[in-house]
Image (tube, rainbow, N blue to C red; front, top):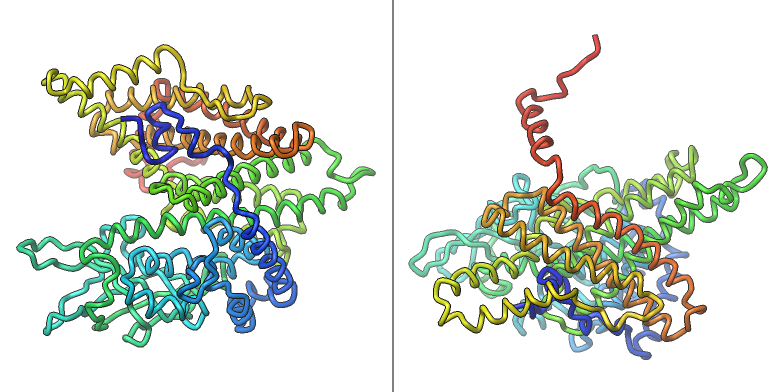
Amino acid sequence: MANERSFTKALFHGAIPEEMVFPWPEPGKDERENTALLLEGVRSFAAREIDAARIDREAEIPPAVLQGMRDLGLFGLHIPHEYGGRGLSATASARVVQELAFHDASVATTLAAHLSLGVAGVMAFGTEAQKKKYLPSLASGERIAAFALSEPGTGSDASAIQTRAERNGAGEGFVLHGTKQWVTNGGIADLFTVFARTTVHNGQSKPRITCLLVEREDGVKTGAQQLRMGLRGASITEASMDGVTVPAGRVLGEEARGFKVAMEVLNTGRLSLAAGCLGACKKLIALSVQRALDRKAFGRSIGEFGMIKDKIARMMTEAFALESMTYLTTGLVDARVPDFSLESAISKVYGSEVLWRVAGEAMQIAAGSGYMQGHPSERILRDARVNMIFEGTNEILRAFIALSGMQGPGRTLSEVGRAMREPIKGFGLLSDFALLKARTVLGRERLNRAHPTLRRETVIFEEYVGMLSKNVDKVLRRHGKDIAEMQYTQRRVADMAIDLFGLAACLARTSRAIERKGEEGARREVELTAAFANGAEKRLQVNVAAFDNNDDELLKGIAAQAYQDGAYPFDVV
């Protein structure tokens, strides 16, 4: 019952499967060395070729940059050797995306969209024939991939797409009709992963979503670069398909099961996005520290002032937590843990919001200079904003984290309810449930593998895992199926899960650091974990209290009145 195949989903039951996150996952010696060599090449290449200000100004990645990425083998980072790729792990691939994002967000986004969205679908769902046909050219960068899901009338609601794929006359393929919006790599892609509504001819007429591999030469037309706030160098366009014919052999996955393809591919994409956010955070921290040391005011450097120290310390703490969460999750992927959906969503939500906070503080430290066009802080802040929208808005993902996490406990309550009506048949289930409840009453689940130096932070984690489980049980009993509409509650549940996964990641990472370097050698990791735990504890306290004492209905009423007014109705004259 509490034996989820996901670390974070298990927390919703009050269980702590610490063997999934301890010891902290690390690449093997050979991969570390190979990745280090590749990163040296990326840094050298970036110093020569990547001019972020020029890319932003001209709204284009120069051909020399794309060619340099091909020469380094970046377009095939995690494509297996047998298909011409580098065969790197999820951890190593994310680290390269992070490095590119340190230098320029548009370049990193271009690679991430190709690998983690376009290529990922072929690798996970492609037939052997499809892999042999497409992966070698995708690995070399001869072909660039794009992911076409969103449409002008639909965004986060992927089930509402209107693009149609109708059987052609011969019944051997599909004819596509529709337009996709915000297609990253749209203007430079040769292969599009397109999601369309199809009707399955099995006696059912209900339309379902099917995923198709569509080549540009099939007749895909892409529009001009869409003007936008940031990521100006990335090619983000519309893609229209009016009568495009696609052979039946290009269905990716099963016909009418395209929604599953989209959701699983987005899981990997969110990890790349989190890694990119981390790279940008590290760039902003470097800029901010240098500014704090160089800028003089009132006879000393501004870095000596408490408020600037506070900003730098918080930037460091959140970046450390983000790095820990992201690479714990890539470690789960590399360990072939089957379900990392919540962990990747959490990394994306936390990473995009941390980057936005760090970008704001970096601009504040840069002051007037940072607000001027041409300053890196101004450009990176513009680039950062879209991450809270990309690949599922953070609001949608919070609902996903909460509802997906509560699904297991909800199912358990439902099964227990049925078992109580038939106690003889349900005796085993009721016994398991009684044992689970007894454990939570007699004492909290323990995290035994964290280093003793981190005992205070470990206790915070243990206590609030119990509080998460207790409150999930309470709100499920209170709202039942209506929990799907209770988004204030969902947000509290999701935010608790985010803080708990972040704390678990920091504890695992710092425990390994202490084991390797000793307490004094790992002093900085210990301090950063303590700082994150302090903030997390305060947020967790607020969220727990708000399950019973909140102003949800008041705020809903204010919003409803605003909808009636159509605007802010007050004035002072």
